Length: 410
Image (tube, rainbow, N blue to C red; front, side, top):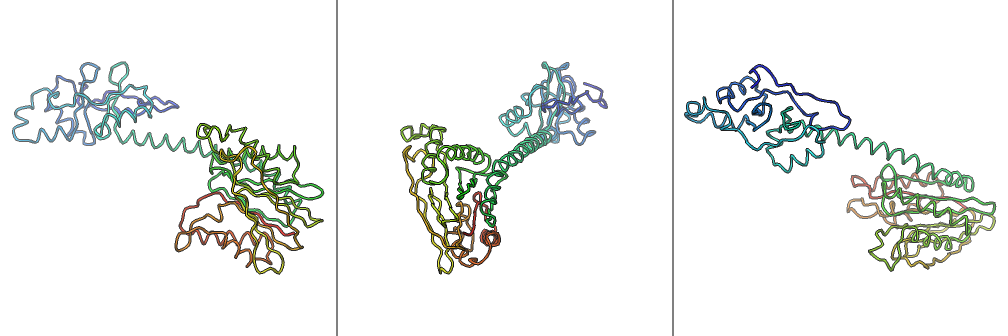
């Protein structure tokens, strides 16, 4: 054994990737030839010592746990019987031993597999079979927490930058929207840092095309899907134009299904079943003509002086999903809108949000009533009223989905 006042030198090499060596503490050690009286003296002198490694030469052979050892030695006549005998009598002969190069993740799994005592009593760290140092469970838990915190920071930094990219892809559409409809207002709020909702606008001399879409999922998976869908939508419009919303949805459906390999024949073998719900329209200001097509999303219309809000329901087929046939077609609904008509589109993040005293969905009825109450408000004020009403409705309930809604007046 090292002299009772001397510690066997442990070390803490600084690796970029944490390993068992980073958890080594210099601790007093026993040899197999030393007796239990000396072990008792060591535990008495070092009151914060959880366990004592036992060595033969430089090779560990066991571990003396403070609680187990003191419990044994406190029994009647134990000191008289065992005080002069080798400390191996009360040591754990099968403690957890790990190589200094083992990374923290592997060490954690091994400690859990070894059982509770590896965390409560500690573990021995070796290199080439020789003793390097001693690690305890609290150190290991701290290292795991630090590692997880570092990874979380890295992931969040990546997601935050992904948000910059996602917003950049939407900037052109927002600028086109404000150019075509100066008094329009759009709210886009991902549930997480990035989201699965997106919008698309194309302005032309005769009119503008606007689409609001809700892709499968939210967060990072949803954001990936928005990149696929918005890029595909842009290609469809470049090829077929923007004046026929039903044609746009049909072409987008085919493109996404082919891109993701999601045919009805493959079914579950397709590997994914992703797509989007969408509401899109073409509006010609000179003719006051609006052409709408929807895939599971609706269009809300309030005409000046009307005592109710109309709802044009989207068709019950999503875009791109396995269940949507490759030749699925959508139908255009054509409206003539008098000056001052209100047009409103929302994804289901608004209507499906749970809240209120009975924990039920916000619903389309409340949306229609709010639109009616705000019928004389400019779009920005109307949208703000909706946000406030939704926030009040949600209360303490968890936000369920991404939120996007859009309003403008003809």
